[in-house]
Image 1 (tube, helix red, strand yellow):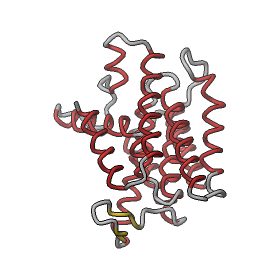
Image 2 (cartoon, rainbow, N blue to C red):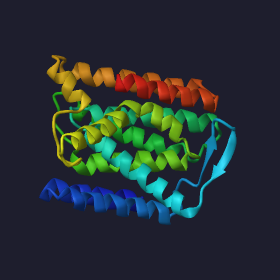
Image 3 (cartoon, one colour):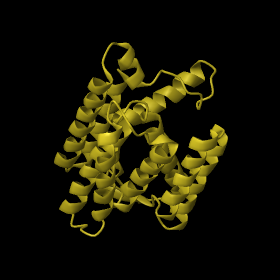
Length: 245
């Protein structure tokens, strides 16, 4: 809650004063640091190749946690390019997380993604095209931070989040690489995102948003159906390859 409130205020300042990207990044780093201080961090992962638990030293824990949370905040922020896209995809991720937690008996923790699901579904009717209300940086940073931390709180359900958010994450990674290739700073906004490319191809906003919903929901369902960690790894690699193509 402390981290969520902080990152919301940073986003609100950006909405109001158009902060420099470096200032925004600093705010995101502080937010990730708040999560770390309150013991929300990536301490161990299950190695799908050996089926053993890998425990990281604290410098790796800090770097992984910051990379994950900051990356998720920017993924949702960059996803917020069309009406209803970021809110709807976040809602799908929350629903998948809630089902996953419930099945594993985490009945107290399941209330967290359900609360965020309720917030996004309540917001979505006003944000779907044609939108009457926009979330801005304050909304997208809050959703990204919440998703990033929920993936850790849920007992490191990051593979599930990766599958649901796979296409938006790959889009962010591709944009960063593509901008570097053309000598641009990674934070310079452009129309190279997948949803903008689809818009240029002639699809309507609603068609693109519903298509993204469908893909995220399909891979979220896949995450719920697959129990083997190895198969989840195959699914993530397959999704990455499909997105690159």
